[in-house]
Length: 116
Image (cartoon, rainbow, N blue to C red):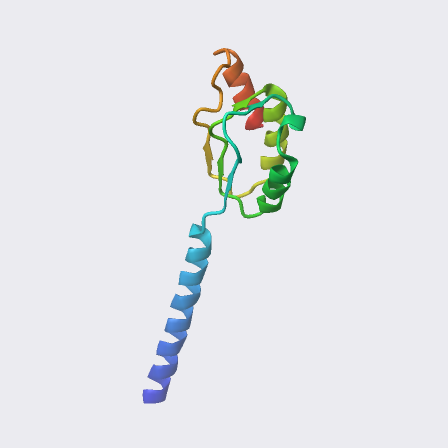
């Protein structure tokens, strides 16, 4: 009886450890931050292609992206949107200060392109 209790406890401990490991994986933050500051990124060619490759590599696990500090044009938004649409775990996008200098009617169109 004593051995059975120990093995039951071991099983419970193993199950709890496995569950904790899985929860930790789910809580892991995989974030992409657009490098640089104050750039006017109007089209895909204006965006650092090494940064875009890094973003593409992170897509399977990406859950957060920060695009702050740059101004994005419609074509650049479409380009980034086409990449991030395949990110199954993406739950947070920080757009702060991303549309400075844009007309107020441009912003919804650019956001729609980014979030396609």
